Length: 479
View (tube, rainbow, N blue to C red):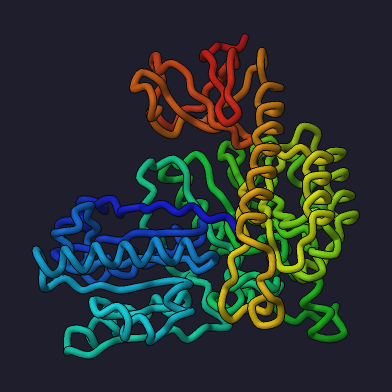
């Protein structure tokens, strides 16, 4: 999952019962992909059982945790700046504060964090969160604490996450962990381990719980949701061997998506992230079949050049990707498609860059996430390829790609002018306190006057204006 959010989320307070029982205070920040934000909710749940209540006040925290991202150097530098801030607060205002680093950066740097960052008391990898209570005991006894061992089984499917998003309307539901694809630029297989899928019954139970709590939208989450595969059931006489039984009783992503949509037809469902080489056509048919599955697919491509895709070990060609785009358009007319793109990958020529621009012209993505290549230590690209594209060339190519994406985004948003779309209200508009902000099924942000509506309502909005990123309209009643 290449999308990097690069923003912080501070934990909201828990239930009244939890506040009454818990006396210690946890301050947690998350950086990077959606999976990190989901993991922070798991950590908050584990620590709630240990007497911790989340707080928004850094100075008051007994324990400060930062959930980190290693996908680009910029993300790591952001975390280091935050650690400097924690150090200042700890030194001047709260000397008893304990500080921990979680997630991918913790896994990548391991003990180096304890050596380099003197304020770090514990380091915890993405598969070791259940060990945090034991690690805290080590810290309390005056010892540094590290657990970054990658698991082959852990999915945290038995933990009910504490929702830190704050709106009570949308939620992440993790369905897989890790990744087996080994893209040469990516640290995820090294920091999150091998791919494993979660028991579908635990997923459906979590969705049931969210529905009971009146959540209106979920996102099924994984580094690569399309490779979700759960082997279940018991050996039956109808099968000649265990292998045949596993294949017949397995649940794949299309089936899981179908089950979730059927179980809660009033709940809106999204999924992220998809990998082109693993997306099966049956998933597209499931999306087309259910009105409550959003018509939006995030489909990272990374480059429009088949040669560069091979260097990236992406396991698909430019032509194969374009055929998949064509099938999406045929099976789900009007489906929004978004991208991840890397410019300046080692050996990228101007011809390769033009191939990327050409692919973008072919697809005309609704929106995208575009970055300059950042060499990550330990990856195959770092070990085998020289980072040989000059920085000024990377910057120029990135500007060209961003400018083209903005052009296409403007075309896509303008296509909604005069149309009426369903918007799920999520929050008050940042720019106007008299307007609501929400998203359409195509993942467009839409704003409109509040009137008598409230957060969590689905509202029909007629679009009267737009920017490259936002739809603007008026709520209407459909006859």
